[in-house]
Image (cartoon, rainbow, N blue to C red; front, side):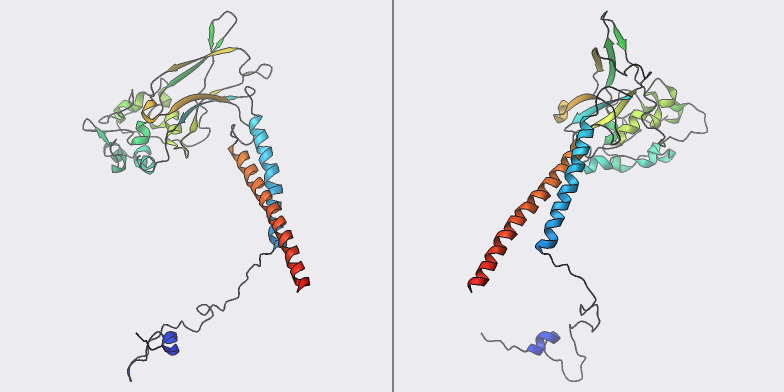
Length: 324
C-alpha cells in the first residue's frame, strides 16, 4: 500500500488547511529557548580529565576512611563517662505505616487530641472504648525491659552501679502535655484515657520520679525517635565518671540483671546491651569508615583499570595509523 510523503507536511505537522482557514503548525516559536540556541557548556570527557578524578577520589577517601575506622575501633571501655544502650535487631521502625502511627498533636499537649486521637493511630487508637494515650504503634511497642548492672567484688557481694537517666536528652526541648485548670495531678490530666495495649503501667506512672512521667518521660522520648535500619541501638542510661583517679568501670566481674518484659520472638529479633564511650565522631560505629574505604578503593581501582585500557588502545591506534 503506497503513501504520499510530503516533507512540508512533516515540518508543519500535517497537510495544508483549506483556503481561508487558520494554518496549524507544531513548529516551536523562533526563540533562543525553544530552538535550543541558548549558550551552553558541555564537558568533553577524555582520559586526561576522567582518570585524575578517580585517583583523587581514591586518595582522599581512603585516608579519611582509615582515620574514621581506627577512631571508631579505639573507642574502648571504659574511660570517661560510659553510655549504656539497649539494642534490637530485625525490628523495622522505618516501616511507613509504623512511622505514621502517632499523633503529634496529642504529644504536644492538645487536650482535644488527648481524648480524640488521630486516625493514623489505628489500630492503637482506642481500647475498651477509651482513647489511648499515647496512641499509635510506635508508643505501643516501647521497649520496657529494666537493666541493672552490678560489680561483683572479691567478697562476691554485688555492688550496684549507679545508672543516671536525667542526661539522656541534654538540653533538648521535651514535649510536655499541657496542665489542665484542675490542678497539678498528672493522673487527673489523663483521666478518661487508657494505657497502650502492651504497656504494663499508664503513662503517668512510668517512673518513680514524678518529674519523669507523662509524655516527658525520657525513655519514652528516646523510643519515639524511630530508627532508620532494622538493627539499631538506643541510649538507656549513663554511668558517670566520679574521679579522674579511678576508672568509671574498674576491671572485674560484672552481673547484668534484666527484668524481662519485652518479647522479641514475635518478630524473630534479638536484644543486646552495649556499654560504650564516645569520641569526636560519636559512639562506636565502623560503618562510615568502611564506606569511605570501599568507595575510595573502588574509585582507585577503576582509575587503574581505565588507565590500562586507555594505554593499550591508544598504542594500538597509533600503530594502526603508522601502518596505514
